[in-house]
Length: 89
Image (cartoon, rainbow, N blue to C red; front, side, top):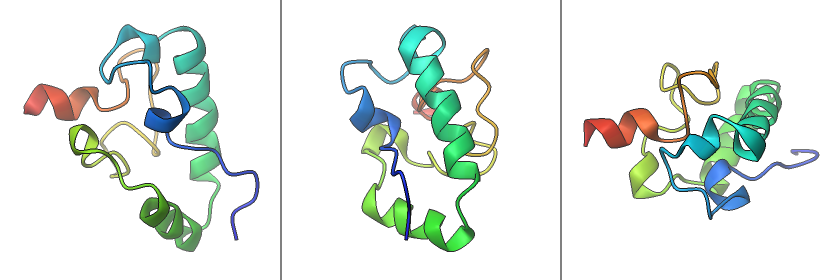
């Protein structure tokens, strides 16, 4: 089971648009740093369960993938939720 569940960014701060500077400063940045640390400490089984509970919206496909910038080394200086994916679309 997952203790102290943290919702993904798009549910926690739905008013911050994906790709917004709000993910690189202030509350959005702080939350993503906290979420990244929390998600990285989950067991692989718990991560799979979480992903099933919270599939990313269409603008964030790949959100949980290594190298995407989230969940496996979010860099608040350069990354924001879904920025890389939306730039590719």
